[in-house]
Amino acid sequence: MKRSKKAALLSTLFMGLGQFYNKEIYKGIIFSLIEVLVIVFFIPYFGYSMWGLFTLGETPQYFVDGIAYGHHSIFLLIDGIISILTLVIIGIVYYLNIVDAKKTAKRLEEGKPLLTPKEYIKYIWERHFHKFMLTPSFVFIMFFTLLPIIFTICIAFTNYSSPNHLPPRNLVDWVGLKNFKNLLSLKIWNNTFIGVGLWTVIWALLATATNYFVGLFLALLVNAKGIKIKKFWRSMFILPYAIPAFISLLVMRLAFSGPGPVNNLLVTMGFDKSPWLTDPFLAKVMIVVINIWLGSPYWMALMSGVLTNISKDMYEAAEIDGASKVQQFFKITLPMVLFQTAPLLIMTFAYNFNNFNVIYLLTDGNPVNSNYRYAGSTDILISWIYKLTRDNNQYHMASAVTLIIFIFIASISAYSFTKTKSFKEEDMM
Image (cartoon, rainbow, N blue to C red; front, side, top):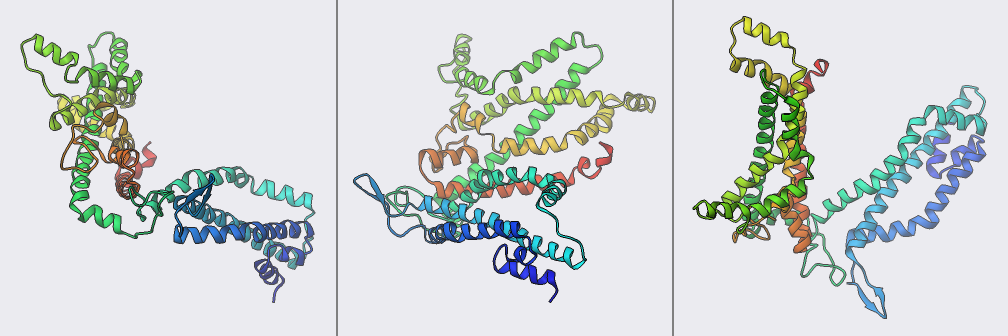
């Protein structure tokens, strides 16, 4: 057996053995210490965590003299996920230990001398500097980004909910795909999911399209020939975007409420009060209209920059060919604007799909809809999830809906990005 294979095999059996075989004592001691620490301290923890992850506990938690006994299912679930992520890191170190032993053995086979510790540190630092810099970010992403995502996915496959499966007094169980089946088949959940889901898609499309085209219209208007004091008009139109959105939304909520100033003005003028935010259809219309007020200034500012990048020669050539202003818009302006802003348009759709602030601050999901479970007529999926978790402790269904949203948005965004011209023709950018 070649020396390199023998060194790799020894390091596979126990970390550091391959390094000892290659007479790299310092590395052998470091890797061996890591393995000893894992065996002594981590294996008992991993064993308990894996048991907790699979069973989610056997005895509900109870307290005697202020001391907790029994199992808390959610804590066990988190411990299990942390153990898996830690095992991934240990697995990477284990793999590096094998690769290092094999590479050093190959070096010896080729008749090259061993590197001294100082030479080895210098070699590793220069060759793998970028990996050292990225490692802390990788670890943080694993435990602060990946862990919550895995936790949410796991909850979607449990019955974590009130009143019978809410720790610490009760245990949580794995239920497989039951939550997804109930969401699609049980009328009590199905009506809400389909109704709120449809309104969410309509809202995301309308909010994105109206903001985009109103912003484009304002940009064309402000930049049109003959418009005086353009800076003043740009400043005026950008003002709604400069004010914090939550303040604007709360002011609008007050202005269009039943006894609010808008209805008072209507009464003064001899008209009846209008249920701006209490009629299901009118409330949805108002949400879209108010969102235009908030979002179109951003697109106007962006479009103004895009329009200045379109060559005037193209318009002059079109005029010589006899193209009308409308034809110039549809054949030159709109394609060029779409080419440069299509990725942002897709991202805005994804953002509006989960635009919690507008719905929550303007209507709180109201008016009430008796056909829905834990949702109002203007709730979108993300605000419904908020109510399911914060107000009603239905974490299992909220996680199932979250998972569906993630799959839907990720699929739509990925597909749309690959179909945009700006993605296919990067050289034109």
